[in-house]
Image 1 (tube, rainbow, N blue to C red):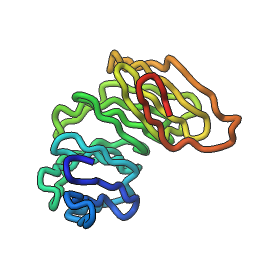
Image 2 (tube, rainbow, N blue to C red):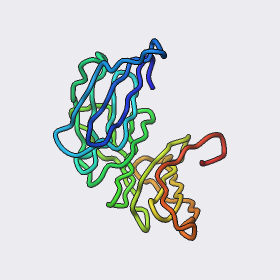
Image 3 (spheres, one colour):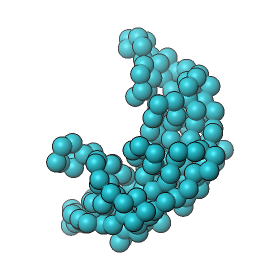
Amino acid sequence: MSGNYVYIANGLEGLRIIDISDPAQPIEVGYYQPPLNGINDVVVAGNYAFLANDIDGMLVLDVSNPGSPVQVGVFDTTDAEDIAIAENYAYIADGYSGQMRIVDISSFVSMTEVGSVTVPGGDLSSIEVSGNYAFVTDFEVGLRIIDISNATAPIVVGFHDMSALDTYFYDVAVEADLAH
């Protein structure tokens, strides 16, 4: 959500932008279909939407006019599954590559990767940033905690193995001192 709008990553059906100023009558006001692949995640920061667009990487849209989103940037990755935004950085859970990537987004024209870390077992499915840490789920293994206080040299500092549960881990949320 951002203001009176909900942004929905709708997989192969693209990005849907819904005006909820009248909650009894939500109205779709905008739509964006990426050229290839589906949208796994969307994060809105200010007038920009950051899309995890699978093998096409991270797309950046100007959504200052929600009825007409315009692509203003792209950062190529192997398998962008999830994105977190903090300050001038995008943190990308890059799926099958097993890498958490840190991208400087201060200029959408020349976004650059400033740091990355390969997560053992690597099939990253989600990411959440809180303070100096990124919390990353590995699809089949569990939770990794990565110190991002130095964006150019992130390091895995913690791991909670949940592989014995024989399930898949799709998302993580962090609140206070708890990861959910």
